[in-house]
Every structure is written in structure tokens, then in C-alpha cells.
Image 1 (cartoon, rainbow, N blue to C red):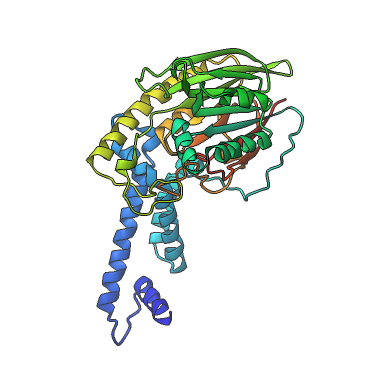
Image 2: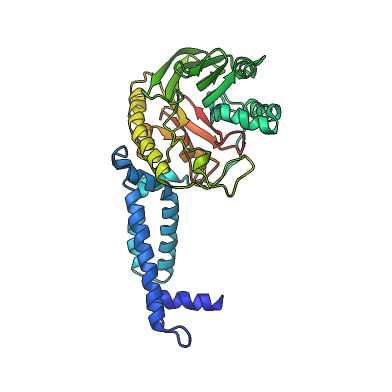
Length: 391
């Protein structure tokens, strides 16, 4: 430990060290650290451009944006180290860090974690947003114990005390005695709307869904003009205390990574690897996904702008918060996580600890009072819950 401390002082202050460690070696190591710092600064600044460029065209910049929280953290470490040793590189790194303030403000929630109160104050709507992974989740659950797994998820929904549920990749079988739709209705959600253009036949339904304790007075399905029927935008206008609010939910283009794109090592108890192979096929899928989401986000933004009522926009964006997709859809809406969440708010269970791709956004008309990411592991996504208080 003492030798490491001596080395740090030598590297950063250019203090000559006798014996095994020469001043020449110290200079070389210090130069290497500076080069690493420069690379991190350049990567950080490049990812800071993501919200301002056409990521449909320059998709590779958007791909680099996936690592923004990591580069931000690395840059912060360098700022602290250089500051301790009073190096000019502290100021250079700090300036670069501040240039990315817009992205920092979207990627991190600067609040200490708080307990989530089950009881809701008056004039509060609780929203539960959840990508339930559709038919795949039911198949995986069946391997272990389908009834226990699904019962666990339904029990969680009941205990959440949410007023509105928004689902992506929602699956129900009409051949079962009681469909999931009927069961959720029986939990206290007598009003629901299912996307019109989803995969729907006499045996099953896979698509988007909104369930509500409040009456739904209007609804619609908006197509993204994609062959994938689960990639849609829907809304339901709910009537609460004589007021009407428009609840959106969407599922944007997924990268479409499957088991073949994962390494065979490090498989978790859900049956999927947490490591992804990055090869040409994966790169091609990333490119197509960024191109699609760029166009889809513009359609979603248009729908928000045209809403005659205060909006709550939920969904699986399949994109991170420092992305062009996120900033386009968010506009002047409030991100419930940024208002009441903490740290990075991971919502996708695999690959990276920084993947927040599920969102609840609210009109400035509302006051965001609570936010939570329950750790339920029914799907490959975590659910998210937020409370919105209205005047």
C-alpha cells in the first residue's frame, strides 16, 4: 500500500524516486494517465452530442451514448485525482464535465432514496409502467412454475395500489378459462384498452395495454408503420374528478437481440446471459433500431403536442436517457425518475447496470410526489411506479 501511495505522488507531482522507480518511469506512467484522461474526455464530449444529432443517420454516436454514465463517472474520478494534486488537468476535465451538464441531468437523479408510501394523498394518480415481456415470460415461467410466477406478478400489481397500469408486450391467452385481462379487471381495473393493431386472434393477444380504475372516455392506436405489431403508440383519455387526462404508452423499436447474440457464459437464474457478443449482426441490429427510434420519437412527440389534455407518457423507449429519442419525446415533460428517483435508475435487468430504458413522463400541470423501481423479477424489465398530484 505504501508503495502505491509513493507511486501516486510520483506520477502526479513528478517527484523523483530513487531505487527501483526512476523519474523516467514516473514520467511515462504520468503521460499514460494523461492520454487515458484525454481519451475519456473525447468520448464523454462525443456522447454529449447525442441529443443534438440525427441519430437515425449518425447511429454510431448514439451507440457510444450507451456508455455515458460510465465515462461520466471515470471523468469525475480523474477530476478528483487531479484536484488533489493541484494539476491543471483538473480544470480541463472539469470544463469537459460541465459541457455535458444536459446529459448528466438526464442520466442521474440527485436524490437520496426514500421509502415509497403505499397510501396516496387526495388528487393523486398512481401510474405503474411495466414491460412484461409478453409470451416469452409465460414460457419461461412455465419452466419453473407458471402459476406461482404469474400469481406473484398479479399480487404485486394488486399491492401497488396503482390507479393506471400501462403494459408493453402484454400477453394473454383466450383459450384459458380466465384470461389475464379478466383477472386484472377483477383486481379493480374495470376499464381497459388494448392496441388495435397488435397480434390478435381467437387464441391470444400480444401488444400494448392500458388498465384503469377510472373511466376511459376515448382511446386510439397510432401506428409507427412498422411490421412489428408490438411497436405501437396508444392512448386512453381517463376521467378523474371531472378532469380528463391523456395516458400514453408506447413500445419503441427494440434492438432485437436474442439468445444467439449472447455469450454462453455467465447465465443467470432467468436463463439468459448477462454478456452480449458485439459482432456484425448485432451492429446491424443496433443501426436499424436507432434509425427506427429516431422516426418513432418524432411521431410520439407530435401526438403529445396535439393532446388537448394534460399528458402522462409511459413506455419502453429501448433507449437511454441521454439519447435523442428520450429528449425528443420528453420535451417539456417531467421525468418522474429525475424528480423523485436516485442514482441511475436501472430498469432493464441485463447487460449493463446503467440501462434505464423505461419511463414515466408527466405534464408540468402535475406535481410528481413519488417514484419507485420495485425489484420484481417476473420480466426482463423492472416495473416503475410514480405518483402525480393534480390541482
